[in-house]
Length: 189
Image 1 (cartoon, one colour):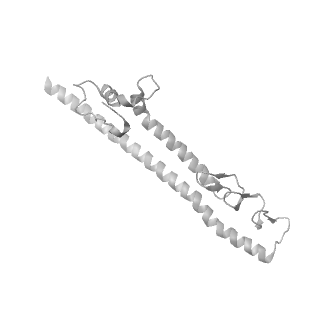
Image 2 (cartoon, rainbow, N blue to C red):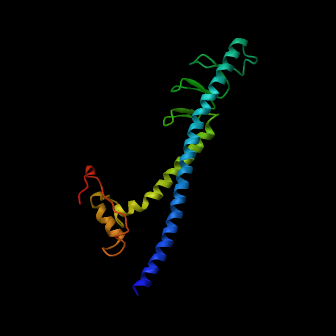
Image 3 (cartoon, rainbow, N blue to C red):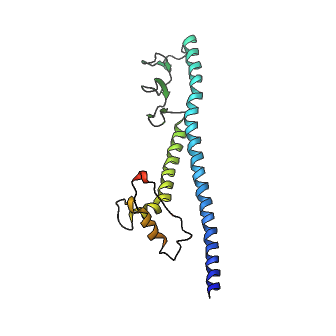
């Protein structure tokens, strides 16, 4: 009888281990795709602005030297005293004129305009997806810490809550992970 019980539990543990490995792989894959996409769009957001700036400088100085061909098209920015194309606004934070300026992003410290609006939108979408990902991943721990229906956090009783979640003394206690909090957090047993 003991041999049959051990065989069944080993088969269940094997399937459980395989499922956990697959879920872990999917979690890692989604995490790294979010990290890569967030960093790629953030760097494109800033790099595009750096690449376009010298082109504007060349165009501005050529127009200053040759003069505007069509006087109505080229106007002068009152702040930086330089020619500016239509639908261009001067950013008071960056101290430069930005084509089709949407806003100045304080978190990225850059203006959102014609050349980087797409990258800013993608960066915002990936950050929302990352926040949703983190909230889904941390929900089980949040449910353990807060209890079944309570909303208040009870970090001092976290080890006992984990013990209650993982089962009694004879169940999965030997294979379950243990959770210990550092004394610097004020956790006591």
